[in-house]
Image (cartoon, rainbow, N blue to C red; front, top):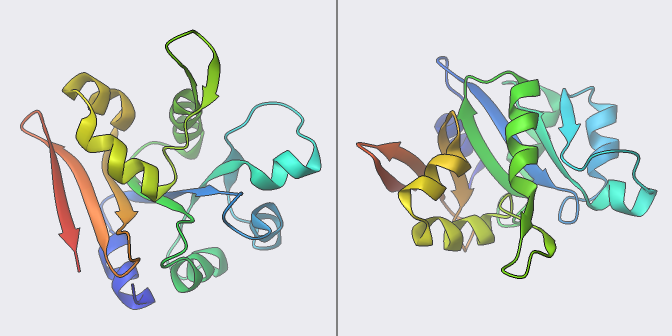
Length: 170
């Protein structure tokens, strides 16, 4: 999707814009966050070895006109870097919520990493969820955005009238 269209859909005066980016898909993500002085948190806990630090997911604030936001808007389309969210949470509250979604258990009780922040995963997962699962995933997030399979558009997901609503933004 063209960067200007992406900005028009995502930036809003009434709420904050966050991205949850996958370090495994975004080249040198921790370095880019550091160089641009972007407020962010790693979603993995504790001290991480360098290879895991660079493959970890991060939640970050996207501010209109910031170097990091411009980079994401201009470079991410079609590359499944992550998802976007409109939310009134603070960054710390977003970290707490997003971290709570990363670690899940399989049916045998084995821990797994749930890569909900990969738009390919989110697009397939959300439609299969019960309403309680959708509410858990959203928390206080107003809208989640994931690029379409071809990267040419966005899909917006929101909860309306106790149902998951999906809108394609082209």
